[in-house]
Length: 156
Image 1 (tube, one colour):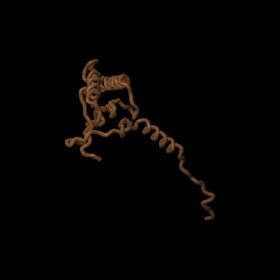
Image 2: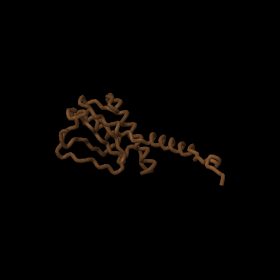
Image 3: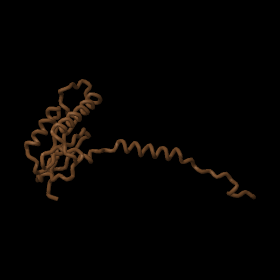
Image 4: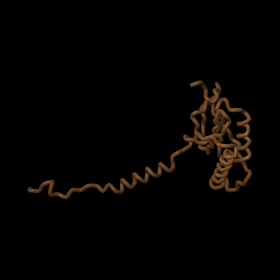
């Protein structure tokens, strides 16, 4: 046998389809990443409540609202005016209504409760109650009925 490996045809796998699939997966995960974590204002000092417990969510839609120590509504760590806050809440209410109409209750009509969304309010411990009251009233006017307040169970 005079054959050698150098004269035999070298078979190398075609990597193009694999690389194409990897790039498509990367693109997919970049598009569906959850940006709710970015809505949390980490500069806030939440109130300390001894009865605070870990939140449990059952797959419902979440609306995260932050109120800083000056009573200003913040989104992605940027302060917003009351009018901007109201528009933000109303725009989210329209999105929640679209989800309800499409997937949950086709007979849902304008003015019904948005029971598919849990509004999570994160307020600094020195936020005036009047500001929280305004925020709650604005949410209720938009149809939200389920609320949760964030607090810490012990000082860090």
